Amino acid sequence: MSIEFSNQSLSKSISAAPSTGRGIVEAEVLVVFLTEGGVGSGGAKLADTAMNGLLSKLATSGEITGKRYECTTLLSPPGVPCQVVVVVGLGLRELLNVETLYKAAATASRMVAARPRGSVAFLAEASWTSAQVEQAVAGAAVGMVGQDLYRAEKKRNPFGKTIWLDAPMDAVQRGAIIADGVNLARRLVNMPPDVLYPESFAEEARVMAERTGVEIETWDEKKLLAERCRSLLAVGRGSAKASRLVILRYKPAGNRSPQPEFAIVGKGVTFDSGGLSLKPADSMLSMKCDMSGGAAAIAAIATIAALRLPIHVIAAVGMVENMTGSDAYRVGDVLIARSGTTIEVHNTDAEGRLVLADVLDVVKGLKPDAIVDAATLTGACVVALGNDVAGLFSNNQPWCDRVAAAARRMGEAVWQMPMYSDYDDQIKSDVADIKNVGDGRWGGAITAAKFLERFVGEIPWTHVDIAGPAFVEKPKPWTDGGGSGCMVRSFVEIARGS
Ligand code: BES
Ligand code: MN
Ligand code: ZN
Image (cartoon, rainbow, N blue to C red):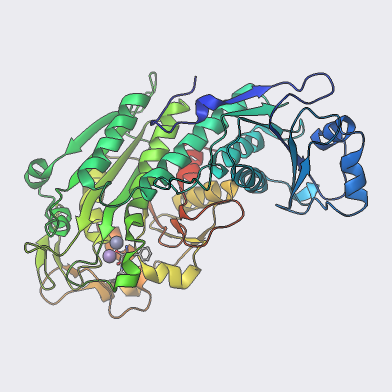
């Protein structure tokens, strides 16, 4: 059932198995989940029995607390056919949810993956819901993958084999597919900008599309010009690399909906130097992450297709590199966007909205019932919400609530920002319909969203500014630094409805 998105697909190495005999299979490492307040009656109890009560003794003596994400390594305990048992805390049983399981599994997995491992078994609990099993499986497979694509000595080593004990097979398979999606987005973000540029990014999308059966249409510069995408093209003009627009469509057999039920739009700036409004050198280092929204859109539709969700979805990604070449667009230029709206350029570093202006207009023409976009759009959003929280901006409260609810179910932090109508005045221009920045830097995340709103018409739309969470500057217990793969699980969750 599992479908490989790319050569790094891990889903084939993950399987489910019943716990045999005294409860444990042979594996190099066994991961046991423990809640606060002792071994209880589930998986931890099973492991405890196999270990002749070692676990409960450690818990009673307070050596192991079961506090959230606490990891303890036990060397070959008697009774268990494993070299190492890792006990990972889940916190209070009453508070157990999808987010905790995803992060706890990822934390254990990340620690275990510090060395090469042949096989790792995780002991699930019968009391977990299938959504919880899925996300635990996904977390474990995300945690074992790092950002060291080009390091000879790897910091993370994906396990040869992962075995989920006492977990329903179908939930394990779905979790593995979801992990492939998140890891695909992370890999794309982590690819250096000399390797991933618009053309090669589009090629990655093509490979994914072929493997998952998603339809793909790629617009090169000739087609982009014919389609009057001059706002998008202007941003790419200072680069030696040609721009692209990729449109993906997943329509499952039997789906009657002629129009897409929703569209995922992504900002795919493969490197953002700022253009002639050049960024300071320090702020440029992480700007390979400026295509994270595009990566999330591609990975989400890949996952939706691989899960065979019964929903008609499209994704569209504008792929450009923002550079300073001799033909670079200038401050003062007036661009005519595909929609006909004229835009005076006040800052070439506010390029994401110029790219999205045309992508949103193209998508609007495909008449989806709703649009969600993900973009590393503004530093101002990071000032407002910090590194871990994505900003939500919308023209339609019920649709925004759906996006927020899906993200909350997945434990991806989001917070809605106001689309204060007086701020519309801030993007007015003296020479054109609008300008590409607000008046001054205050409220910059909102004025950016106000700009995007001009291009979606009446379609319910929610913009997710992921400038903070897209790229992990400081590793956390459950994730290495680099691309986070944020919003992939949330977008898949939207497609699953409810
Ligand atoms: N890609 C940046 C935003 C960004 C900043 C992403 C930090 C990730 C981390 C975007 O293109 C940008 O440069 N925005 C400007 C807008 C300003 C010129 C109005 C910004 O935030 O400074
Ligand atoms: Mn920029
Ligand atoms: Zn940018």
